[in-house]
Image 1 (tube, rainbow, N blue to C red):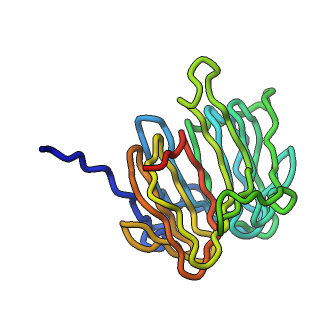
Image 2 (image 1 turned 180 degrees about the vertical axis):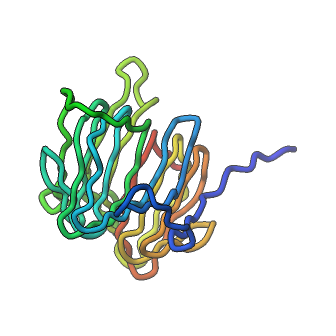
Length: 231
């Protein structure tokens, strides 16, 4: 008799990762990367009055502002809120008083010397979104969703949610059909790989089977590719 071992989740301690200077006034930490799908997670710290020059997104990007605020030609994303830069978006990024942001990127960016046309970036103010009870002790805010290709339902589905776990709440055993990145905004939760504390991340690979528990409660930002299914 053979048994199939499922992949474990990966706890990422962001404080253990080095800052790298990308340009004057801008430092970044490379947190996670999936080269096959051109996806990556990056934390960026932008000093006051620093600016990211004009560029086009080849692929898209979700940005969560941890502290401070960032602005582009389409609006300002303040701390605790999310910005979305769609494929083809052309913009600059600036900050008056500095900012720290977490970016989930698919694809890349290319520098531009002349402004071209492209879809605008979007700002999601999370306080404007309703809480929805997902299960006892767990509420969610649906931030952003991409249903993927119409000819392959679920195959390329992506979404970003804010989830709040009450003290003692538990997610029953489930399998990830697709993968997921979570960022702990406050509190802590744990699975079979160990605890994930505020300011750190957890990656749940395709096929990962696990439970999620929290002793004192937690608030998390989750970016999910695919879906989950009970086991």
